[in-house]
Image (cartoon, rainbow, N blue to C red; front, side, top):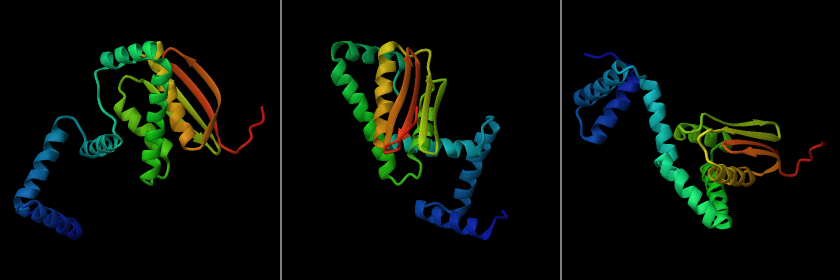
Length: 190
């Protein structure tokens, strides 16, 4: 006997039937998974949140790649075909911003920040903050090489410009990007 809220019991019963399980086996499977996660030092809430994030970044066409391969191929492409490679990275940023905006995400910049942070373990600091008509981006990634820094910069510029921001200040060095932007159509007194 397991006590549960009626709405949860009904939902579990429907899901079990949809998946071809008995309610008994479905509930036992859920409990087994919860015990495994919690006893490993994890949190069931965090596991579910991470699943949702992994699904979101997968749907946005992000992928995991070996860091050395990413930086190495970025370096080769940047050195051999700089203009075209910068264009590709900018267009990738445009695509990402459109993907989030077209999905009806209320605040695409916050969603993009969350997903890039989740996926990019090689970036110790990545922030996108908005205040009224202003947005700021801060990237601190000591392992970025100069070429990858420039490519990631173009990616971010594609994102910002697609969600209607105009970049008004850039401070860029190897592994360090700081951008300030204002909503298009807003005048900034300097």
